[in-house]
Image (cartoon, rainbow, N blue to C red; front, side):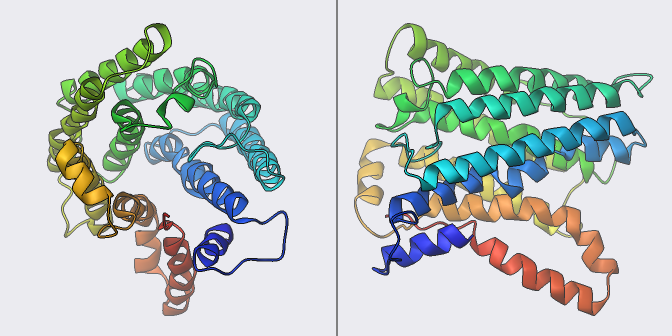
Length: 336
């Protein structure tokens, strides 16, 4: 939040007399901490929150989660210091040195081990646990491949409409939405419409393979992969309906989902070249996707804290609100 505020001042023409906290460094640190800091780290605990809700507990698993948490924080320290020292990759996102991803991958090993310890407590392993395990096992490998400067996706999507990159980033949010919906379901929730997430996943894997083994994607190919994100619209609406989650019983989660769907639909409309030129070559829209996703990601946190607010004293509620309001503002980075 502090680095985002500093970068906002830079955009207004105010600069600190520092060779370390420069505008590029401040922006890079801010974006990287938003992508890898408090919110994603907290969301990574979702599977364990769900298992605790089902009375599944493992002290050994928690010890491994502590190691995972510690390693992740060590990564954040090295990432921040290196970016402030000017070690950049010249990217809009993921601007830190590639080698730091190995710390994240190593922390993921302890996350997998923690998940295994929790799974041992189950007599019958639920399907969502198996899916979570497969995703977690694949994540460290996928991280090192996708972030690789030579064969990865990051450097190859600096220029262009990034339709396939959008598909990949959007897909990473779907498992989180699934876990949140399952956590807050008002009745027994069984996920349906599996084809609506399998098709985008297969499409993204195909796009990665194409970039690695064949070469760059054409605009029409990126357009195709971009439009696969529309599969997420009926998927999330169906999940909300089957879980009986409404604006009345969980306004935070509903607004979060609809913010994501707004960005999804808007992004596909703006992918039409004539409309893309109209809206992205003027100042009518400022950080439209960032604001919508900022609302969505910020409100992910509220369903967890809502019961605390309802049952707490007025003093605790006021203190909490004073804490989350500045946190909310940190989700809305201005863009040049």
